[in-house]
Image 1 (cartoon, rainbow, N blue to C red):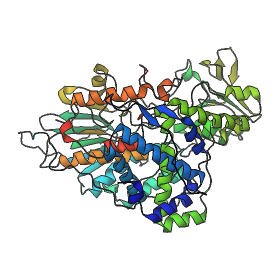
Image 2: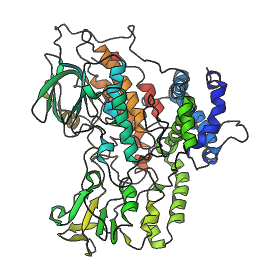
Image 3: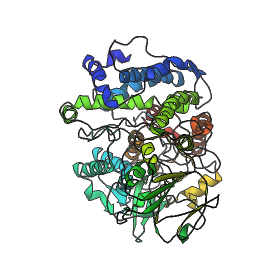
Image 4: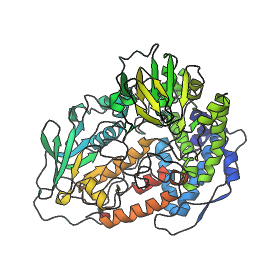
Length: 611
């Protein structure tokens, strides 16, 4: 059944009017019409058609905005991709996804049917744990899991959080200028839209307030254990539950563990000679020192990642001198940010469908980026034209312009967005240093050319340890095997759908291996994973199955196909070194396709793939 027959006329009429809220500035229709025929990414099983066609819709009404052209073209291409990669059922499922996001139809509860093949029940008598579910981490992922557990009528759960408050990334990163780089109306739960975002890209304080609102609205406080860091999970194979040990030595048990620790929780410091010798003030952007007075100081910033491009423009006007040490320049696109007007907020608050149409438009627009990131890196050359123009329009000095212009394909590293970063580098009191750092001394930083720059403070904008989706927590599964050891003995860090790991029953990861994103909102992935894990939890009721452990061959086949697909993506073929890749050059971080494909794969739990 086609999209035109499924979406009410009123929705189709509202879409073009609301799509300017996406803030899209690129005439993507011209890009799509010129790409021609491009080889598609390979199937996970290596079979099927070998090409996908990049062509815009045959007819569009005159006067439709550029944003509408982009969205319509993206839907068209997305459906073609689904039809080639899967079948007509998948394309219809994509229609269902858009309708759910629009709020036209109620979200379908995709629970496991009794007719589906189930693993055989174990013969041992069940031993009940203290909790049916333990969720570790109270950032966006953990909060989503807790909310959906409650909505499913599962109230026997506990939510562990190592800090004294909820929020994860948005609690810890409170540096000046901290904001989201995904449009606010998409970087929020689909079931809890917020019509009152003050900007297209919300600042940190608003996002944290939104998280706290969710805790209050969904009454999660009774389930929270703040200040309780889980340091060890150990599977009891006899009793078929997990023993959970917190840093204070307390032990509890749960039949199911959902790990939601997140990837942006442990700051990464550079490995520099003498880093411990510096006698001035030094801190990481994720541990911002608000007591430090930047006024009149000489400050070094090490790193040019997503955090640095936000805080550098804020501190540059305050300091006497700012020296920015850059190893590799990032691609920085113009950021289509602006205030949301009172009228827009009132419309979104009083017409719920308007909010959902705006969200869906943003989703499909951002999803179109996958065409260049994962389908064919050559498509990113078009976006590079706009990125280079952004540099040329922002920086006058040819020498500085050369320093900040990357020599790798856009998308190989994380694409950043800012209209303030390049102008900040133009300031007379800002110096960009591209020489490698040789060492750090008591009073400054010396580069390989033996030039020492004395500074009062060093701010590290060097990101996070993202190579481990469970952080420092020990996870011990069947036979006493620690999860990292199982990855070392196998083919590296991997999981089935990024959620389940063979040998670790009743353990489900949110934002696990290869479920990160480089193009859109991670909240979408979180909701898909929670839906999948929730179905497993429902099977593992007090009187149901004792355990669910994904089959090793299922995990192996899935990840072989996934890595094959990643080989042709821009992250692997773009000519750069990035934190997306592990020490063996394998991408264990990103999902190599459209998010709606992941949604489709996690839509229904398949118990026959588990033992």
